Image 1: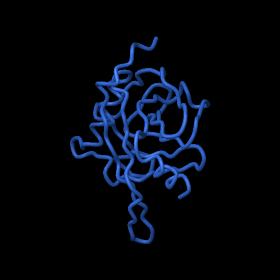
Image 2: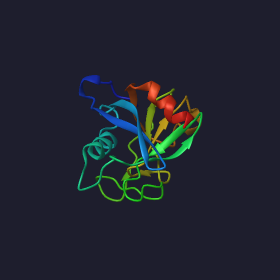
Image 3: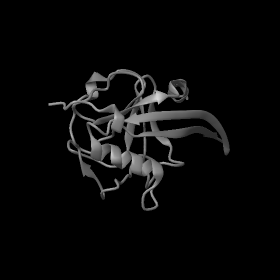
Length: 156
């Protein structure tokens, strides 16, 4: 059962998005997220910790290792940078908290679950509503600024 939401305790963080081509980097802009600490606190603490940097691990300079145009992009491999790695602030992985929230539209953040019940540092960012992954990946946030920059990632 979903407890009463409390937006006043939600964390906000951001990414600066760049495209790198043939050694040249082009800034696309920023994406700001609001995390649902009131629904999935451990998941949000993991993401926020890696946004800030934790024990030498950080989302800074990590790529979106998989972009599925029209659906979502995946990023957050803080160890191998290609989608085959990842680690959480709690250790190798941590148990998924719940599946109360849905992939309801553009700009939804969810964990990229390693198996049915665990996640690490990898995350998904939706380009549209994705009912097919509800109940499989833990939704923990949404984009609140920079939606136009998500479109730029989608067409890259």
